[in-house]
Image (cartoon, rainbow, N blue to C red; front, side, top):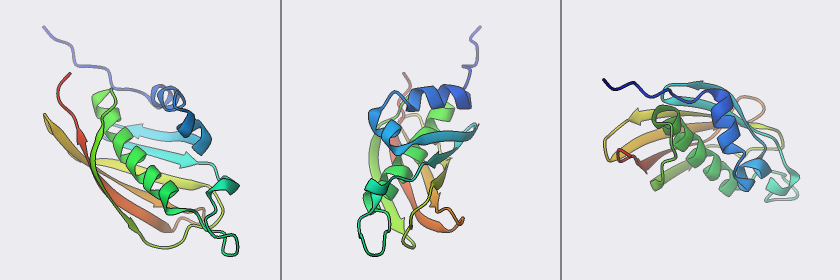
Length: 140
């Protein structure tokens, strides 16, 4: 008789996220976890500014948030890390100074590859970036 694997809690994912120095630097905090979904926040850093006059966030930070949030939505289902195969990011508006919130959701879970998407919102709740990734999810 096989047991169903226990899915990670928000505390589990938070602890695993903070193992990575880049995730620490981003100031990531897990807000919510459900099977196939995760919600994160990233604490604002002045180093994110790409344009000193307009003070908006570099697109690479937004792309990283899309990728890692979609990825960790899959981790909420698999209980283990999944490598990115492909990623597409759309930028909707500049993200000014302020914390960012990201929501990731599994779209299709497969035996070899899976698809997840994420949306990133600024401090005012406006959508600033979204995207979809393909991730390797072979059975361990």
